[in-house]
Image 1 (cartoon, rainbow, N blue to C red):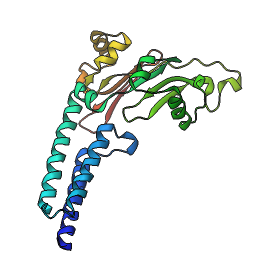
Image 2: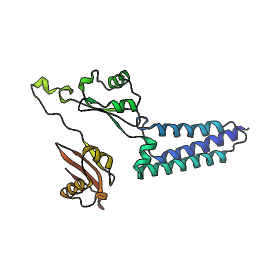
Image 3: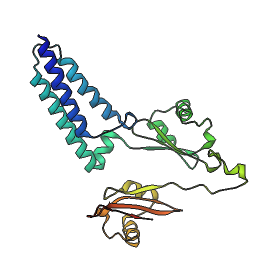
Image 4: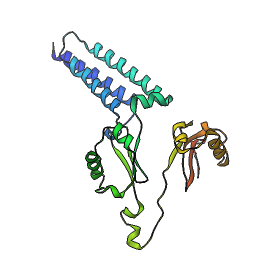
Length: 235
């Protein structure tokens, strides 16, 4: 094997990896799901294993990465279009704590011990579970939390105030599609959602990019940009 062969493989491999990365979109490490992490390792492994193998040419490297990238692109499209495929391959957030109450089934399903949970909270600057009102375990393994109002950075208790805790926000419409599982979880129907959207001025759910709802604040809606580039917004 000549230095030229190695150089060509590295060149073609780098171009192919960059192309696949751009094709699949930008993600931070914290946003990677286990599935994303695995396919990233495989992409690097294809290039690594082929560099010093005389039987593998630069075109073979290009072909292997191209096929792998095409399969990943198809999977990304399927997960974007079909919620069941997305949940199966990439998972979904788990509610570990809601209104201060533990979801034992969710903890067991994610094989989380209490000390592991406490360690994850300490990384977020939370050293006591009594501060936590709501806690989510994201598909990438990170946590998102909401503290009780009295445990904020500047606590209302210091000012002798007793603010009400804000209820959870629920994402009912995501990119023009109704999140039926969330609706069912909250105890709402699709008919109710259609009626509420019409009250907000949206006759077609497909024109809604993002619609979240809470008991206290009602709807916060973002529509798809109009022809003039402006984005609609409603509360």
